[in-house]
Image 1 (cartoon, rainbow, N blue to C red):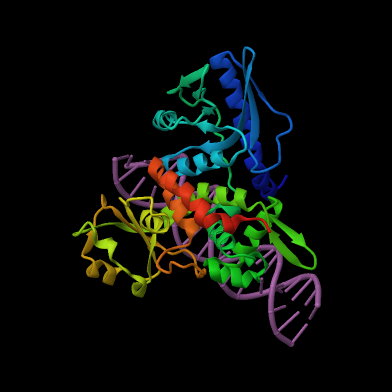
Image 2: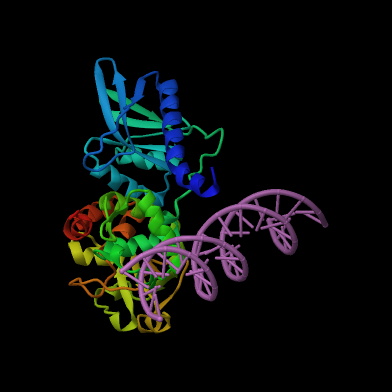
Length: 351
DNA sequence: GGCCAATGTACTGAGTTGCA
DNA sequence: TGCAACTCAGTACATTGGCC
């Protein structure tokens, strides 16, 4: 097997290893019977696996989302993934830290990991084990190129622009601010992963968009977002943003402010803006200064396209959605749900 | 703990290939 | 012949390990 093939195969192999190890540890620590369903269903939103847990005469069936690691940044996206499953969802992870275990318990999200940590609260089945340390081989998942930073830039453009997959690679490269060769490798990845199919004559079609969107919002806060952060800032006047219109400075609302405008559900506490220009004039105009503990986050725009939306002063809804989920906060996850129904559903609808 | 070299990984873009 | 797809060597950046 060459290096390229290994990179393609490893993620699924590693998921299988994580799943089997987590199930083994679950059986060992709880004494309960747990099985992996041999034929996972493929209708609706696809789970990574289906798990059956037996307690005397009762049987609990879960759609599983298998993750290498769960952090605060990826928590929101993972919870949203569970929402989309047809059955009750469970997170199966390589490792869940005690802090994240407490967060998941608070939100009543079932999980199990390869260290034997578990939370299930479905009376009469009540299990909560946390604090077990990870031992043994490292199972770090090798990401396909499509889910690395440059690949995520390409995916973002494909998800935001209907039929962009049929544009020349040069046009895609221009819109996504990545090199031509990167577009080629990402498109090949997407074909291998069955997210793009060839339809004669010489056309491509993006499929399984909901699944792809979910993988994007899970990978974005880990892989791409940290690279785009220009800095944290604070304004003299806390309410500066309420009347601000910064389009002339090429600065656009993301995160909570954009979500509040779109859903009228949220009272913003943190401000996220994106720009592709120097921020000096912006800082002067609104009396904003650098502060590592500040509530204003400025990020670089990693795309080069406009989409036809009624709100011209904000970033594409997919990014607002990802920003909300990346906070891992319950109020933002709820707002993200509303935003998905209102603004995002049409982007991932299969024609 | 801090520095630095070695090594690995990710990305770019010029050059090549294939096709209409 | 020109355009689009694809390849691959070079470069930048990140990570690791050894030494002081």
